Length: 382
Image 1 (tube, rainbow, N blue to C red):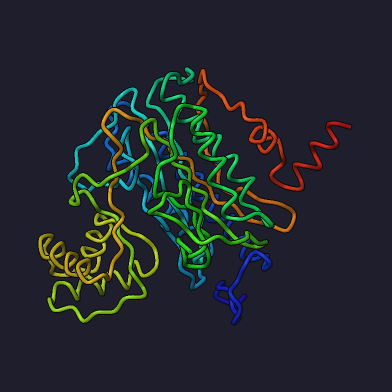
Image 2 (image 1 turned 90 degrees about the vertical axis):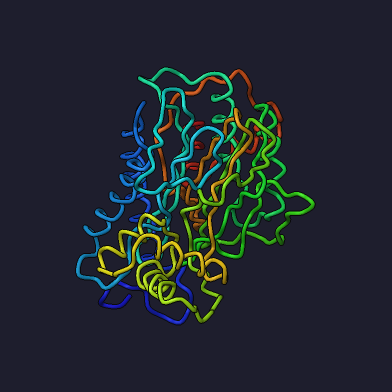
């Protein structure tokens, strides 16, 4: 490691370097606390944009308190998204949006933090209610399905197993709760400054959507992302204007024509070069840097960047109205002594009348995640 706190060397840094593990855990700790701050603000009448700001601001502030004086990048790795009921994900509205939560809403929170490009992302699902009353009905089914599928995925995504081993058990679990895995959702390997690596797991392969098979290996890091629906699990974009989350497409180059577009693209490259960002954050950055762009000009510039493939959009996806969608996501380090789940979120009590009865899956869920927990279990049995 260099004096400025960044990882040096020609080889791609991985979990075999202790400082890398430390940075993943530091990012996860901030992400865990940011998520709890957002959950604490999840009440009947809470404005969604305020909750998004709470998450992003918490991460930015806490990142400023560590590795002080070190010339390393740190901050939001994925902007806080708050997606309600049948909204599948990526909802992080603009400042003037008045959408608010109401009692009984099933709410998905999704966010990420990075330290020196080492990323921790996570998501959880809660129901807006007073007290610790157990969640029941279809909300309980879909949340229990997502939690159980995540617990299974953590045990399937480990060294020696293959990508092709994962999807089958996940769909079986979803079906046991009368639900479906949502199509198109992927769990990605993550590397330094890479939130969506090429090695990925498709939760529900279809004839139109498939990924290449590969073996999981030690020292890899995965964002395990589980999204389950009470409906068919076929998300769609209802309105492209809802999209507010974008990421720089590093593999694409183009000479932009409009001056406004060039200013916007310069802002993105200086402030959001590798991580996803919101239109809201871009507008704030434009104001901080005192650019003379008006909101309309900035949006026009953004459109030209999108039209020429310089940005990847994260569209707001929807399930059929009336259905419920739950998401559980966590960051998992494939360490030599077993998997380490570095992100965690508090869980509301859930009381579903359905359960998994498949023996193979129950046996899988009974296996320890790490060598440490296996040793504890053995000692307890003795």
